[in-house]
Image (cartoon, rainbow, N blue to C red; front, side, top):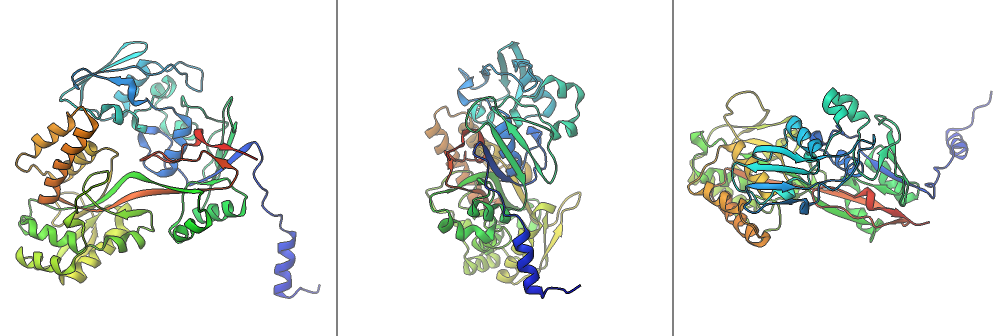
Length: 449
């Protein structure tokens, strides 16, 4: 048999390969990553947040009210789970007790079928915002009884506008259905973000919920008015061992913080999926964050002032290895001391630790940082209490800025980066928008052919 030359063979094969079909007029096609879990309390990644947001309807902030910020009354809107059972106050109470949603509550009870009572151990004004998080979504009695979390993750039962047509297929995805609205079906396709991006550009996919770093710059030209970015509830910090004499002096902590080239980390190992940190807490900061500034000369001066010398170990969790190793190299190159990046081990660490904090509110971030560092500076607890109990949003923001100022002054943890998400979509997609610290709201998206 006579073989075709390689070039002609490739052309012939391409001619025989069917072209990718454009999306169906009635189906929204969405590219997502593989969720680590679809159990709301276990959701930590962007893919999980995207899918869960379509399967569940969270409590609206106005559902929670309190006369004193200590005793809260929660009135969930009437709804049903996809299995037909009603969502009651008991659904929320049983879910929170079992999954351990952190509210700082002394008491959580179902007063009646439609009322939840929460009694806190200290005043907190962020309760309405916290209750919108995935961890506080209700679960049906069937899984609360069986506790088959693996099975539930494959076929979750929520109370949202969309339901799964069949169990989730790892590596493939699933179909979401709704009884009314546009569209009535969403086809979730698991795959590589690069392939999803190119498919949207080619018109064979409607929406890509992640944009890889090597498409980040092109995104603005390829999808000038059809892309969005939003902050994610994730941030990276370098946590210092405050009990270690080498790090007792804040000058040494400043040296490490200012040796970090955050822009290079964001562009390199973080793959344009993060921004250089501009402060210690979520939200915009008007004042300059001095320790967030890359200043090699100042870093060396602070290291000398603090008497830093000898080898330093910089530890990391497995998920943080890439940027932690790059950060260790930056610090070593700037300060001129050996810095060894090592996996975290059990017990007391003899060097700083790179961590990722998952938190969408200032209060949650403060709690995570104080837990990680054991920091208890003079008057800090009073500042935190005043901020968490402030009733007005503007007053609360101002008080948390005072909390942040002390964190940046004493620097128990150096802010390194904050996460952000990206999405791009085709010209037939309408009403695509992302919720801060969440993702693209699939239930709000419509298609126009």
